[in-house]
Image (cartoon, rainbow, N blue to C red; front, side, top):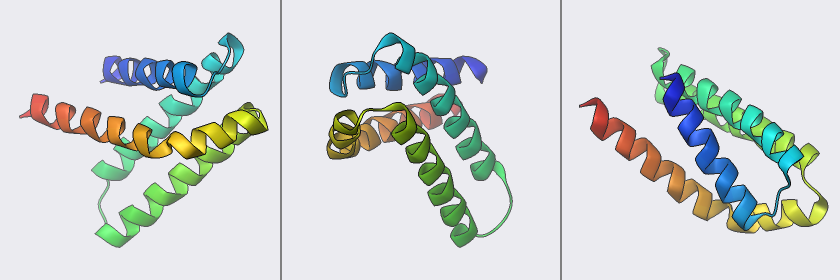
Length: 104
């Protein structure tokens, strides 16, 4: 599944280049943060435990990711990212839906 991680990293990075205006140096760091988030989310999804624990772990993973992005972005980029985050969430849901369909 590492190729999926790379593919989704690039999709997120491309989205951030287009919509947030990140530069090349930021793009590399965004890829690292996104890879970490995706791996953490997959680990949470595959772990045992109840739905409430998984939801809390997902929220913690997203909070860490957003903190990483905040340290990488300018104030203006962070404002833009936050305003467009719902679009990114929609694209991530489409990716997850496509991934689930291909696994069937």
